[in-house]
Length: 224
Length: 301
Image 1 (tube, rainbow over the protein chains, first blue to last red):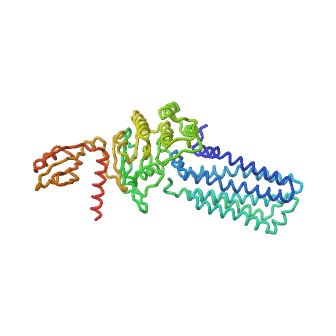
Image 2 (cartoon, chains in turn purple, yellow):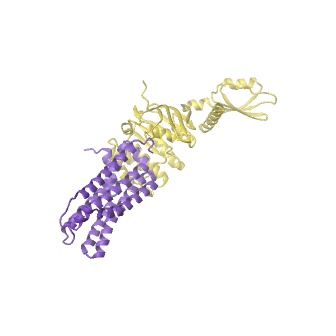
Image 3 (cartoon, chains in turn brown, cyan):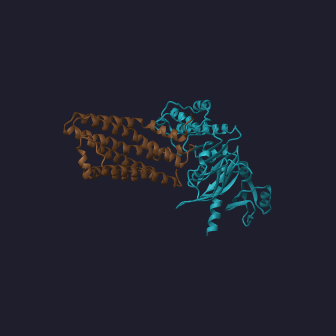
């Protein structure tokens, strides 16, 4: 069956970026391996490494997949193809988010399985890990959305600063929520009201950012 | 109603420091139109509007019967567009690009693509970053031509090319026109390139179309007359003469509607015709731009 142009653009982006995606997955698995060793230092290093890999990929992909299209002047080539501005934006959002989602989901599942299978890590950590991991997804969507709308490095760098600052702040606020804190050391997963509200808010922000990106792009009158 | 390959009617676009003003343009199927203008004249803006990449503030744009920018997806299936600032993916090979375009366009002609590879002296397995500027332009053109578009829109495709590469590209564009249904809009500030392949010439300057005619009409109508006028003789202002420059006894008159009667009128006034010269397209273009700017400034004053 003949693929649509949008599908072709998405698959082309995925193929062009398979190396950084694989590198991020490998880096995350390595980080989990460090945590597996046990001891304070490997666990701290492993946790930092795990999230750093995702954060770096989240900063890298919007630059290479979105900003570079304009910077390296490949945008006129793509826009000469039978696609509209909205279709192009949709393809870019799906490919950019998809390229992040693949390693993100792989590593989140790996981390959950890792915690479940680790005798000394309480399962109660899982909701917090999911909330922090989702925050990296929110940050990534913000960077990607700003990159797509602005098509410039300056605003994208500003979005990176906001996103990267929010990770530490998010962690700080999360573990200070009484409901979340109580469940953190629990041997069982507790889906309290607070953690569900946080996750719901994070996904709502993701939908808002992506929707706003498509809306703003569709209003552009000069594209190339 | 005539089906134009391109029809722009009263198209305008306003920027802070530049305005594209009331553009009227018609290109019939099977024709090659050269769009000539100095840098910053509005060639690229006009082309981007007709490709749907920039939305006009007002006016109607139809390309292959499709309204632009609303129907750009349908139109772009049959348009091959290449511009001077268009780049391919540096890290990918030409073969990768050929497979990419082939996966989109069902009408991709692989045999023709292979033929173009040979004619242009390109290696499909080479990465784009290893290509020279001329090879990059040829690679882009190969990707455009092998999809067999009904309309080619080329924005300054020969800029920065050496004479051999320019010749190869112009020869290929001329060969494309063996298929009578095809049309080409070709923008350039190089009048020699445009003169070689175009049937129709459109001059654009400062955001306005200042003239649009078929090439032969330009070359037939424009003449430069070298005159010798004895002192005390005033050269008459004649219809069809747009400019007279006089220095002592010698004068040069530029005609944009030359008829033999003009020479006779000068001789009757006491002047002697030294020579009547044909003008090159470049000379016509420069004269036309100067005339247009003078007229525009007079109106503005």
